[in-house]
Image (tube, rainbow, N blue to C red; front, side, top):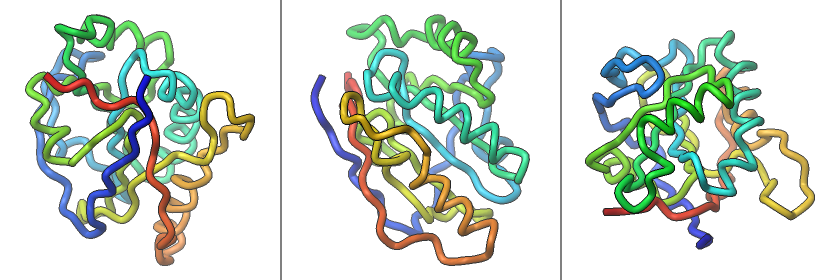
Length: 184
């Protein structure tokens, strides 16, 4: 497990478009059809990373709390499934079912989407406003495996709350830290 931080894509960046396989439904899905009326959270995750396993429960809780307010969530796995077969689309569907994901879990087979987002690690989180402009990127909260800090989703929740309250998203944004994306 290597500790890799987010690259922190510049704020204001337009969300790169994509069409990817949703491993849960088996359908191809586009960003345009998945975006939320209040905002869209794009999360690069995978099945096996200890950092993702650590935050899975809170990701589900945050998605359930905020989807009723108009935010939509999209999870994407871009890992090389030849070297990491535990991240295959079949295992992704199984994992999403086990974790009760309330969001699509998309497979980025070519890794082009991860590259377009400049994603570096899992989890790597991006919050876009209604115009699909980046307003937040980085960590879920300060909790990491073994550091004893409880999971709250505070960093992401504060950014979404700012949007809901028509306020400025906090300027101080900490990078996420996790396993590096497994590039081909």
